[in-house]
Length: 66
Image (cartoon, rainbow, N blue to C red; front, top):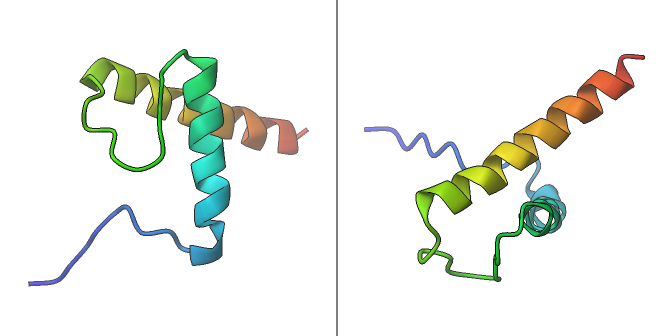
């Protein structure tokens, strides 16, 4: 049985930058995200943070194509 954890970063050194990005996106959508455990967030709140992250990554990619 292989361990295919999709939460692994391809560049481990990027972990801190991704954490800052996640906190920035949470702040933008009004979700009170804290360091460490956030299991008390609703699925809607967690999804809005992830959705904002994806939206900003797509915008960044599209801007780089110009």
